[in-house]
Length: 197
Ligand code: MN
Image 1: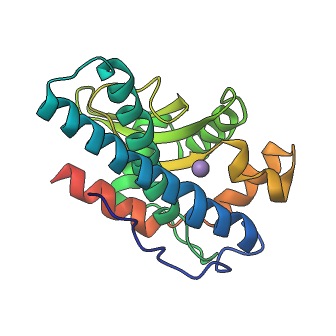
Image 2: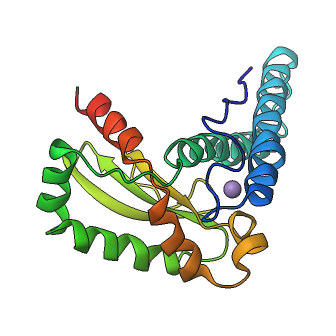
C-alpha cells in the first residue's frame, strides 16, 4: 500500500501564484485519487496472480503505469514548489544546466516554451538521463508517455487543465510564468545531489 505524502506547506502557501482552492482540489482530491487507484490496481494484480486469472492483465498493467506515474509526478510537483522565497540552482546543478542548455536563461526559455505546447493532458519535465549523462527537457502525455527510459525527473510542471484552469482559465503562459516564482530549487538541488551520488 502506498500512502499519500504530506503536503510540505499550508494550502495557501503558494498564493497568489497558485491559489488555495486549486491546490486543495489538486492535492486532496485528484492526487488522492491516484493513490487510491494505484492501490486498487495492485490489489487486482495480486488477485489475478492468486486466482491465475489474467484476462485483464493488459488493462491492469496499463492502469498501473497511468495511476502510478500520476502518483510519482504529483509528489514531485507538490515538493518542487514552495512559498515564493527566491531560491536558485546551486553551483553543481547550475554548472550542469549551463553545460547542457548553454545558459540558465536558455534552459528557462526552453522549459517555458515546451510547457506551452504540451498536448492535451500532460507534463513538462526537467530530467537527468543517466545513459546520456545529461539533463534534458521532456514533454509527457498523460503521466507516462514519451519518456526516455531510465530518466529521473528533477523538476516537473503539471500541464493538465485541472492544474491551472480554475485560476488561469485558458491562459497557460500566465500559469507557467507564475510557476517560476514558486519553484523550490532547494528541493531540486537536493534531488540532483542524490542521483549523482
Ligand atoms: Mn495534476
